[in-house]
Length: 390
Image 1: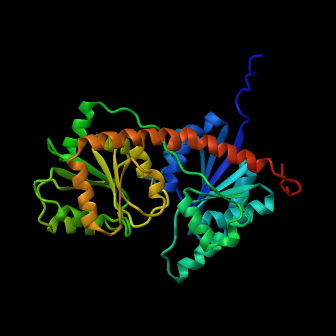
Image 2: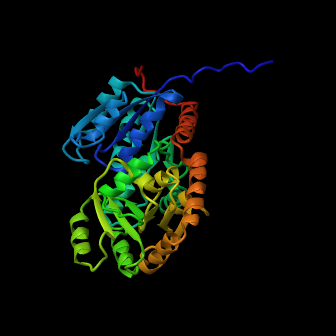
Image 3: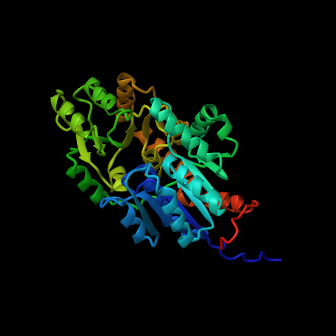
């Protein structure tokens, strides 16, 4: 007998809560999710604890039909957070709440328990180098997550760190890697125009770094590596991103005796797919990273990767899509760059292997299907519901 058509999945109303919707990795992932959520029956809404910035992702989410609300808090520690979030949850009436980052975790933990809605949390960051105050905040977040139905770690490395740091808070920990959308094609004409606009001359190998410019991202290592490379090595490093370290890094690069076009600062960019299409390789010299989204984008664009072997980087890069180097070692980084600059065949087969890895593990459609299954599992469990809710 032919198989019966099961039809579309039932709609789940899921409200994602995050501290703000500024330009950040966790925030950007909500936009990626909004593109694919309807395909698996997820009706997405988003609540930010803080006021919505003019240049943030709220408009991107609304353009995709997502309801976006803000609690308008004065700070992440505003004591009015729980009361205001409870009002929003009564109005939105979600089936499940999904919290991101510790301030949202603490607020959602207090509210969800009171109104009887199950919730999950996603860990995005390995916080292994924090001071006394940072450890206290980190512990408060971990305590809140003990009340979540599931805590998602975006990489096995992050899960291992969390289990070691908070063994009592890890009983419901699940690994679920993030995903991103398949990149749109870029013509050779557009590719050439992008390279020209960045000052990447003919015959140059374009190596792009896409990362916020803050400590521990390895930008200084990249500048040190650029010094070590001989002037005749035909490579241009394009640094895309902004942040608190940008001015210092620009000033430092200007003082270095570098060949023309060796280091290019592209500033903050949203056209990541276009930049990757224009590039020949991706360089990611970070000192810490749970699961770098920029490298997932690199796989999707079929670009070879040179990255520090830290955190969850190896889980993205795998064995044959690039070269892993020791963090904080500019000489090793420079050697890896020169190796790929000199070997276009290696760049091609690494890029091909990367795209295959993307399709199997990191395509956003794969990610959202796994996320929907996790939600269904959580909602299949008995839940204590507060009297009068719904």
